[in-house]
Image (tube, rainbow, N blue to C red; front, side, top):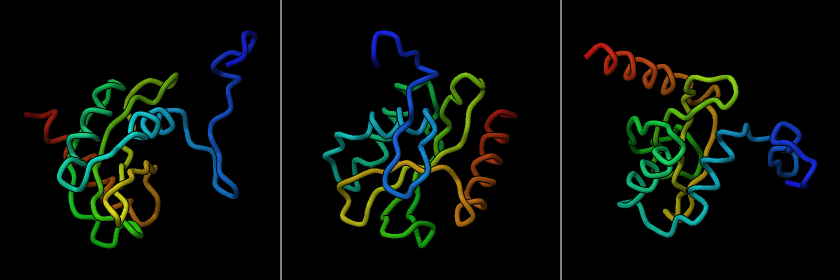
Length: 126
């Protein structure tokens, strides 16, 4: 940030043609940027990153066609920033098992998001 720039004035990252990442996704993605593990260490890396942000690791499972070119997908809850509360997001391990990207739920993953929300409801009742 520049000395006169505030966090609210800071643009979020974009790539050519892609929409901007919300701040909580950008923070999570930055914390996972140095991932140098494999499929076996994916859950631990994502769990640690979620914890560092004050979020929760919910579960991970094989991507099974929920996302293109991915081996595993993890559901997380991360702080929404100024809005407060927690939002469900997904961390995806690429097909090579070497890179993690973070995405908000979309049409393909809406059912998984609903499952994650139900999972949280069950845990809160226990």
